Length: 100
Image 1: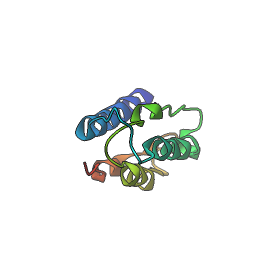
Image 2: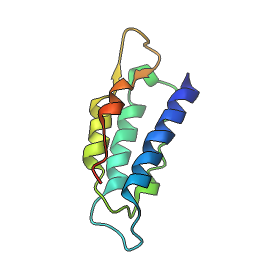
Image 3: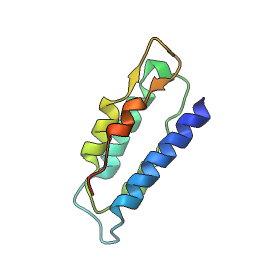
């Protein structure tokens, strides 16, 4: 089950990176910090204890669009449920779209 979540995470973040492009000249937005906030939230979930949510946030350095709202949406749509208390429910992530 953890492999499924890892694949889901990689897919979501890869899609966001492709959609927004890259800027070699740097950017005024702090996507790395927004990603790290999400990573901190995921690693703090009681239902994901023992799982390391390493999101490779440095990859967002220099991207051309602001992902803060996108990462906040992912945080807001991550919950622990009684149905499966050992894994977070990420079904709401499908509602999050990076506006680039």
